Length: 293
Image (cartoon, rainbow, N blue to C red):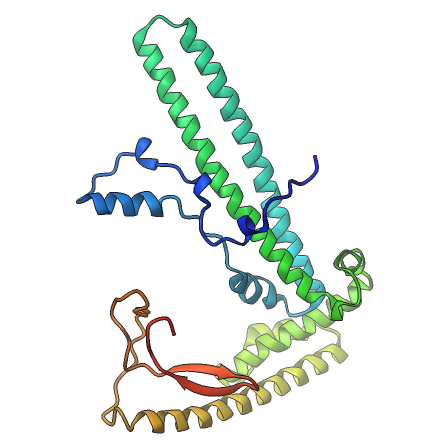
C-alpha cells in the first residue's frame, strides 16, 4: 500500500492535533482538587512527546561521527518506527473488528450483566484505538525529523538523497576503518581532557587495530585534545570579559540558579544568571535575562 500523504503542518507540529485528542476522563477516573486541575490533566494526557529535531540530530545521529554511520543510524531508527507503525496498524484493525463483534453480541444477548460487560470491552477497545493513533502520529513525526537530518548529510546537494542512500555502503570496509579510528580518537580525546591520559579500556581497543591505524588514531586524539583545550581557553578568556562587565551591576556576585526554572511563563526568574548568546562568527555575548530570551 502506498504511503499516505498528509498536510505538512501535521508532521511539523509539536502538539497533538485537535482531531486526535480525546477525553480520557471518559475512560480513566482521576480524583482532582479542582475543575482547573481536571482541564490541565485532560490536556496533558493527550500530549505526544516526539523527539525534537535538535535532539535527533545532536544526540541520536551526530554521535556516529562519519556520514555512512549517521545514515546507518537513521535507517535503524526509521526501521524501528516503521515496525512499530505496522504493529500499531494491526492492533487498531483488531480492536475495530472486536468492537463490531461485541456490538453484534450485544444485539443477541439477553443477560443485562453480559451486555454491560460487552459495553465496557467496547470502551476499552475505543480507548486503545485513540491512544494508539496518537502513538502512531508520534512515530510519523519522528520519522519526518530523521529524514530532515538525512537530507542535511547529502554532500553539497549535488546528488539527490536517494542516490546517496543507494551508494552509502560503497567501499564499506574502508569507511568502517575511518569510522572506528575517528570514534576511538574521540573517546581517547575525552580521556585526555578529563583524566590526562588515555584510559586502559580505550587504549586496549586501539591496540587491537593495525599498527598504522593505531598511530593515526592516537595522533588524531592528541590533535583533537589540543584543539579542544585551546578552544576552551579562548572561550574562558571571552567569558571573563563578560563576567567583568556583569560585576558592575552585581559586584558581590551570586551563584547561578541551575535548577532550570526559566520563568518564561511568569514563574521564578533566574535574574542573577548570565545568559550567553552566540552571534555570527561565533562571537559570544551576554543576553539580557528576560522572559522568552
